[in-house]
Image (cartoon, rainbow, N blue to C red; front, side, top):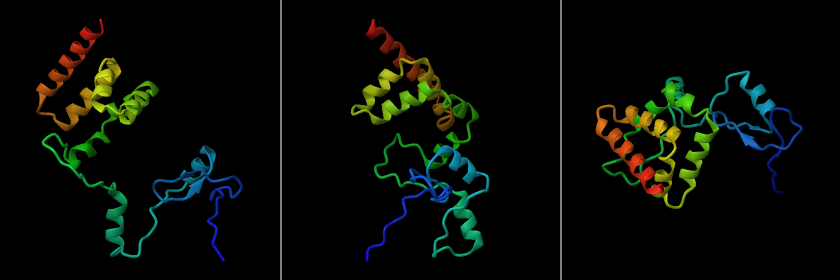
Length: 159
């Protein structure tokens, strides 16, 4: 006998599940069910190899880190990348759907460098990139000047 996995929302137990909570992995079907789920704090599923309450608490507070497979001289250390999530300015910029669309296009592009060049013609993207660079390389003002030069050069070529 094969065990069929339930495809029903674990919040309302009525509709088909479509999403999974990133924290606790519970399945839900809609925004209302997600909001209902968020009324109570959720916790990551407990694993059998947790060493105790202290280790479990430290796992809960840490963001899972993806290993950097091909590090280069331009690779930003994970500690610096984590600071991006603390920036209120970046969070406010990311509320803009146009910026999110630009970032999606860059992320999905076959030619990433060309996609960045095109995106750099948008002042909103430049503001986002500048803020990212200020956070991950606060001592390097030359990078910001280079980005502005790239925007200027790209605008000249379009005319």
